[in-house]
Amino acid sequence: MSHLTNLTDDYYKSYDYNNLRQQTKKQYKYFINVMLNTEVDGVKLSTLDYKKFPTITAKKAYNLWCDKGIHMANHIMSASRLLFNHGLREELCQINPFENIRRRAVEKRKVVWSRGDVQKLLDTAYGDFSTRNIGLIAHMAYEWCQRLGDMRMLTWENINFDTQSVEIEQSKRNTDVHLPIEDDLFVMLKQQEKDFGFQDYVAPRPYPINGVYLPYSLTKLPKYGRKLMDEAGLSKELRLSDLRRTGVTEMVEAGVGIGQIMSVTGHQDPSSVKPYMKNTLKSAEYALTTRRKA
Image (cartoon, rainbow, N blue to C red; front, side):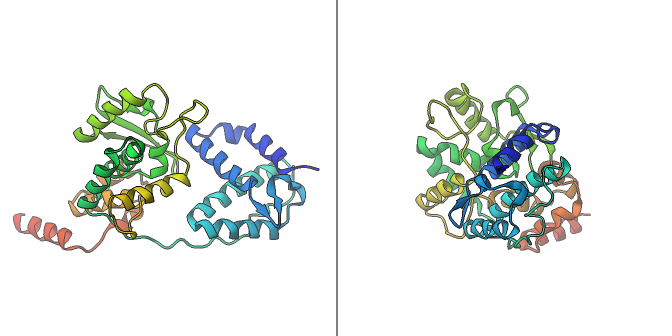
């Protein structure tokens, strides 16, 4: 039988996969592994014949993933589609069982944090060694307006202490952004380097597994983040993933131009910034005050 793991091994040897950025490769491998280890009707997907993989099984797997979170489910399905598309290109299989599965829409969140809530989170996180690295991931996501996934995978080679700047490879758009490091965060990163500079990741899980320091997984980070937010007394409505949106919204309200915002967020199309443009009292006051001064 042509087990799905055989197709996976072939994909990992392909030019398409090996030409991806390291961070993107790690994420694809993570999502594919989740798919392989999923059980449908008591059978693990990794054991199925990829040449006869039923579409109904793919649909059931997607529904199981959606039960745990639609956003994550869509990532897993995208990676699964890539895997089977590789099989089609190499004439290893004849169908992609994930191709015609309709994605569920993720409700657009509009929640933003107050600066007071951000400070509560950081005060709580930095006060305990076991939560410090989660706090640093959140701090970087908020300060640089970046995604949590990219921050959890950030390595020391991305940080330039001489120029007090960071270079981030955004996994979603394969875009590079170059950003300054604000003084308070810079001090924290200098201390972090003393404690964790002996390994690759800026903010790994604080305790090694079999002697190896690993980044937080995409599933563990929100789980530990929720526990930390509860300890800080923050609203259940807030999520760590809202911190990027919060930082961008603050730039909009401060009157920062779209071009400058895009240089931070990595967006290539100005229309992508529009969801952050809100009619707020603060932005209206800025607009009218600027108008009077003109």
